[in-house]
Amino acid sequence: MAPSSAWSQILPLILTLVVVAGISFVVYQVYLSALQFRDYTAQRMERKNLAFSKDGGLRLSVKDVSDETYLDQTQSWFVKAWELGVEEENANKKRKKGTFRKAA
Image (cartoon, rainbow, N blue to C red):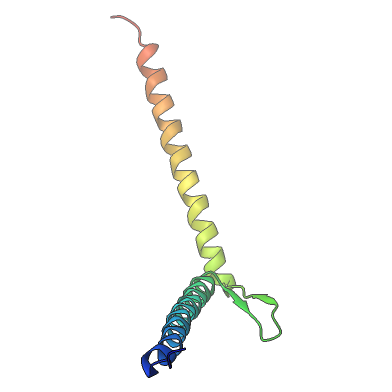
């Protein structure tokens, strides 16, 4: 048998290292995208007042609305509804006056 050359003995080692490096690169990229996805999801959930606690639970925070702000918003809707009702009532009165006029 002929003695093996140094190149034929090192070639399998080089191929193995290249394959392992390629697999490692792909796994690292998947890891980075998973971290980016987690951060993006956490930011979106925080905008909707949801957050994960340290023990893995989901925590919901409620926006603080003062009584005065709540009453102002409610009152503005009632005022708008009242004004629309008054406008509708005035429009109905005008229509009724126009249809029952006597001919001169």
